[in-house]
Image (tube, rainbow, N blue to C red):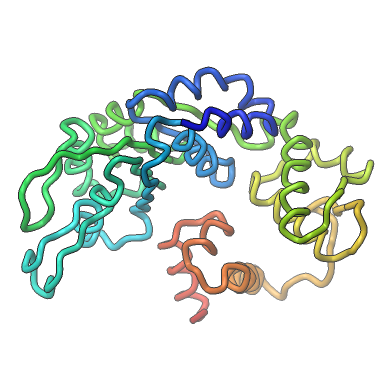
Length: 303
């Protein structure tokens, strides 16, 4: 178990440092953990830290994003299927639960799990057993982590998410506030990001200008950590000095796109170029689900 995984995260985020003992206890347990917050608040990074700090750190961390899967495929993707289980199933498929055996199953965007599939996930959580399509019942040797939107409790109240599944998932719940509510984290996080970017781009010794150190904590950061990192990376690539002086997001940084749709198109193309065409990484970069990115590409005519 790597106890330093969470401590390393907390070192760049004073708000996490305050709950570090609780996070370490949660990581050491076998209970499900639910991470709630806005996109870009660091939920995925914290989930990886919890896995790395758990007794299952040597096992796999397998992610499943219901929002990126067609509803008809969710059961097969989660639980797998045996040859001949349905038309066209010539080969078996192990499923994410089986692939996570001995490790952790990470349910990302859990609020997007269709109501029809939620009873099967509930049984998996409650009984630690699952049945592949066309197969026999097996024990599930996995630890559960889930990432959900801040609005997940509201979806429960509106009947869009089962309350009994919610009760199973919320055994240990941590909420990651948006960056605008933890302004004391902004500069430590920015400095940690600069250190990482400096390593990635061979630019050691990067530092923020005094002007940046003044306005960065005061900004609202609607895109949270992703927006902050994108700004720093863009500023880094635009110059060659050690001191970075990024412009505030509300300052014009060049010619405006012709329309909102064109701005969205440019952002998607840039994310796909950055990820070398990897849909999942591009979606994470943009702060949307893979299904949402696919729908935007179809609407905008992006191949």
